[in-house]
Length: 133
Image (cartoon, rainbow, N blue to C red; front, top):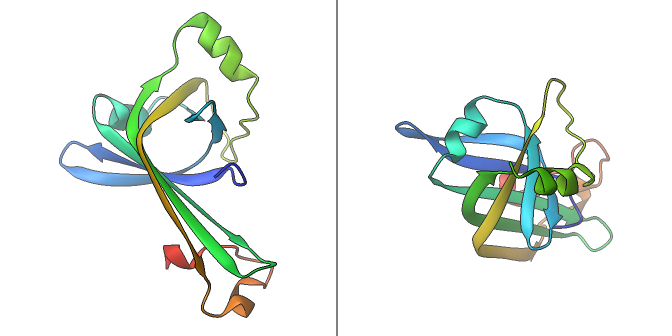
């Protein structure tokens, strides 16, 4: 999971689940991301979350997928914010991203598998794992 920086965060909002793409880093056994105020922050309040990331080793044609399930909390203590600010978190979406969030895993699961037709994934334009289709 350390080999990628993009994943999908699943949260529970009111009466339904929702999923958000985001950038993240693995930090000391936890997952950290930056976000602004809004729906993601509302979705992490007091409910379990899941973060899924996947990737592909083009040299071997092997794909992988990891799911981290746990609780997310905003990083608010000044010394924790200062430590987190040094992490290589580079959101792709513009706008204010001044809130740091840490997911502490309860369960981590994953798998590796051979891609049925590796030539499909070697186009250079869209590196998705077969697990997302």
